[in-house]
Image (cartoon, rainbow over all chains, first blue to last red; front, side):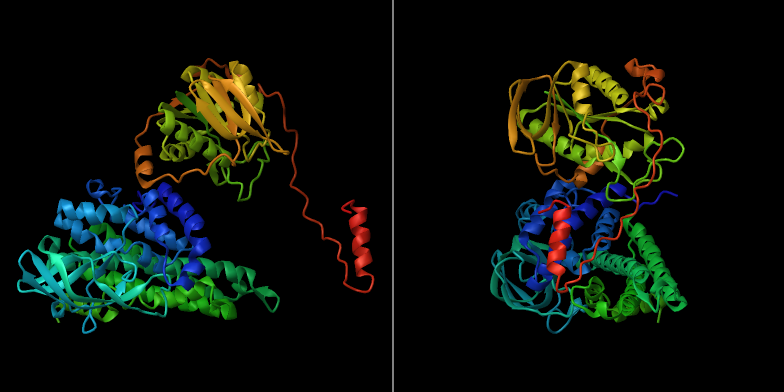
Length: 365
Length: 259
């Protein structure tokens, strides 16, 4: 069987890039609360930012499978899900602009972002509601050839650094997505994990936006949720795999009472259970991803994939910290960072409960 | 200008490397094989010259079938095409025989400039650049840390322990480079996709007019008779920081001629 996810050359490129350009600095970026713009430019130079975007809009080509391989390899080479969130925010900010097809918007926002010169974010969630996009309160009032936008957006990934925000707003004509500049960052939010990924509260006060900046409605928004959820699911099993690898190395080295930890049956069985959960999650998520990549519109299976991967990740990061003992509780121990980073996975991109609602609806209850 | 870059696939110097117990050659089958590190600098230098002066960059590799992986990786950095000399009779070739094969392939390509790494991380003999240049009757500018091209005139800064020497020659010539010369690029995603479609020509010894007996074990000018593992490291001397610790330390350093 040909493994669609093998891609040894791409993995080689991503591994080298991660080890040279990310791993040595990640601790500093975690403390700084953001990644530098220069990282975007470097990643763009080797084509990492453009993967999954067509060449006609300044991308590198490649598909969802290539994007997944990049995510897997960054995390498994010592990166993190927080780093993915910070560096690949354009993965959720740009697809709507690309799908809208407006040449001018593509030239002004998509191309420079894929060159690493601009940073974009996706602004949907509000203080009053998250996954319930129908309840969005930020308004866009038509005024001649412009919209006047007012409202607040919360938990916006890369919002503090963003040059523009693909923003969900309510118009007289229903829910729309607008590409907006000129918003205000009211707060940078401190979080449990994902420290290198800045998260912001954005305020829109009478922001004037050309009507030509409209790039879609609620259906475009919902259609791209699948890719975002799959990406989070991939981050989950990749994080779990990385924690398993780190733990395996540790239990072989660590001796207690004259024997390596790895020789204890209790430890061995825990490792076996971690490995089983990682492999099941990876297999199921990749299966769903292949179907999505081939053009199927999957919703229920993507929700199942996310919940499966989140559960595996939660279990494995917890066991990894436990098996590392006191070391695993130290800041700058890699498993400690993954443990904190992992907690967002069952919350972001639709909570575990929202995923279960989707699955239950499919069951007809 | 046509530039031929020599690329060798070697066992990863960061991992365990062994010689085969049956014929004392490098164990390539069980090793993790990569492009010889210094060759990446050679490729980068060729690509920079191409960007500045135009022309063509061709990768040349002598090695077993599996070396194709490294050739594709080299191509993903940007060169135009590759030539792979592969022949079962090459197994066991010494440096002299290998230089004969490389020189024949370069002559067939008709290169203006040959660039290679100053040494490989497996053999580390550093003689191949000189041997090839001698066989081709062209200048050998070896050990470069800087290369400038002005028309047909080449100038290098030849790196030495004390500093550097400026050496010039005219094309055709061969230049070998150290890792001080540049900072090799990563292959880009587009480069990886494009490399799969780039021309890769495979040549046998017959295609180069070389008889099997001139290379391999039969044609070898040197033979590895036996090999053994490096002995395990011995425990060092421990000097306690007692009253006479200082003088014992000085005695030891003096006995080893450090002071």
